[in-house]
Length: 432
Ligand code: GLU
Picture (cartoon, protein in one colour):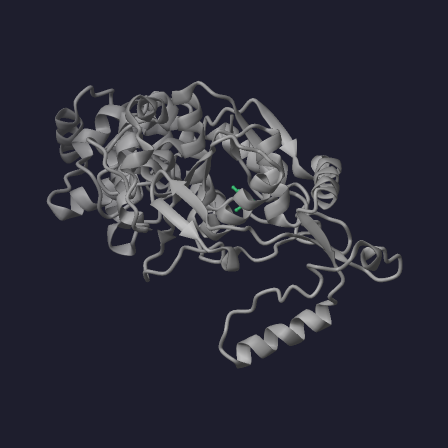
């Protein structure tokens, strides 16, 4: 079983979507189910409705899953496991107050050494730990030996017990800490491979320490995806404008193109344009580069353009807000200058809008309007063009510029002859 474990604390980030896509691909390739685990135990940070939004986005991208688990529903298991660790003396109650710990943390900082738990409560006698008055956390005993992590992308790493420290597994409120809940839930779901962002790399040995302490010996694989960098070479963060999946959709990028791009970056692939279904055939986690991937919006746009080009005209037409496939064909012509369907709309809507004609052309435009509206139907642009020249007596730029404005609403653009093939049936609507 695989899992995608988003926190419902904000908009889905492009990096989260990449993690979801990779989990989906591997689950399909291995024929193992994928569950979505909504990590909602940080109640302060949860945002109402974000869980539904995440699930809707997964559906939009064609990421199928077998179940949705809410982490908060596993609270009783987290508590039961913490108690069993206490009983087995693999965990202990810690009565150090936040103020004391802060003081020691400050001291460590002043001495320029990393703060580590100083074992104040590690060896308390049982009678000393029966305390009904003071709040206490539960800490896992510091592991006895180094924890080895084998990562499909990053290779092998050893983590020192000192760095894992005596991890708090239950807060004073008796709520599981993030690493504890995550480790227990992965165990409960019998996860075979954890695929997640590299920001969780340092959590992995802690989570393995929890599982070791609980006697869970299933070998779980790990794959930590290198981060995505923004234009300035920094980690693309949730604060970056244009880092949420919603933003890309609103900007007119297609789900297929976004998925294509996210699978492509930092990867070795034999061709640039593909669908998610195609990627299932050849995707290989081991080919993901260890170094961070840089987000390049121009490349995404060129991939988006290719996906738009491959789209059925009728579908493309719907994306730009029209019903007829002819408009999809017109949109395809405009792909020379537009890369998203939002940009396409800014090209196509003016064709049907009221035209603003500069004063120098108003007279010519009036003549043309009359001629176009009384013209017979012409199959070919050349014949249409010659007819208008003859009827209006206009020539050169005083003919061609107002004609383009009347037909397209813009001064520049693709060849009118190419557009005419698809617009000839709509002249009445266009030239009002
Ligand atoms: N909830 C974590 C996040 O949103 C993911 C945890 C995990 O995949 O283990 O980043």
